[in-house]
Image (cartoon, rainbow, N blue to C red; front, side, top):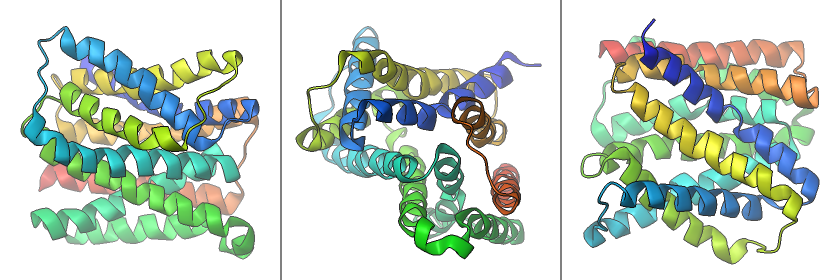
Length: 279
């Protein structure tokens, strides 16, 4: 087995810890804005050192684009996802996050004229059906806000990928991430409480390092050996890791209907990734 495949698996596993760290930090009575602010601030500091050690230079003409990127892909995405985790569960949040391929397919067609094939339509139908099962509309009143926030987090997650296509045309991935997280930190600062319990610092550092910096670097390293299409397929292990950890740490469980929905969402995402390889 190529080392690149193992790196992709490890990167996706790191991403799968995102909701876990969020849930752990809520025990310190921190709000989503404060958690995400410190996540981006610590990650930005690490990336700043990393980039400056590689002769990094600020490109001022690119700053307006990254301000937009940071607003949608960091500020909105992180807040929507973390609020979904707070009012529902890690399992629920990560599964609705994986509605992102639906938005990516639609946005890809609208912005880049990417073809919508029969396989993509089938995958979209499967994902949407899975989302309905996970949302558990039999208890819509209880799940309404969490479902809306979760689906919106999927939209901003898709925007993250769409804007990344534009970003990496002119910057390497580490520079792009530095700019994006930097602006995200600025947008989060006015809404955050800077005073935090010292006991929360290890968890905040873990949140910034493992699913943010380390996951991203591992994935980029893997792409030196593995095709993007294959890497994206392997990375669908992320929600599986999140579901397993949520059960082991918090004893979170899904209803039988939601478990079927989870399978549909992951299956639909896999079909889309495989189809992307063929196009």
